Length: 94
Image (tube, rainbow, N blue to C red; front, side, top):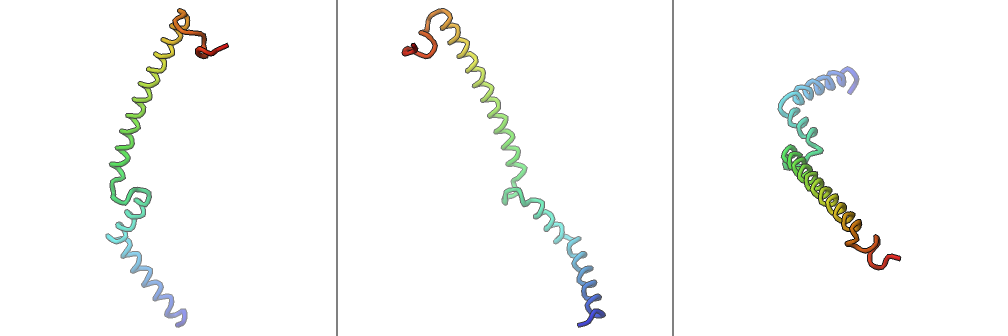
């Protein structure tokens, strides 16, 4: 098979491949490639929305814990200043 036959065969195969890939088969292939990083069940957007809701929930819980810690620190400082607690470091402090 010489170059005089090979060039038209490659050209015909290239054109046929381009036509096939521009159709529904090409779109399906492109969609599959685009979804490579998403879960296989196709719920990528749902999972992302759930993750954002969970993140918001965790932020709210962290803020509440920070408020409780601040309150506890203020109460302990007040009690220590009024002598209601022993010295800092607990009952065995030097």
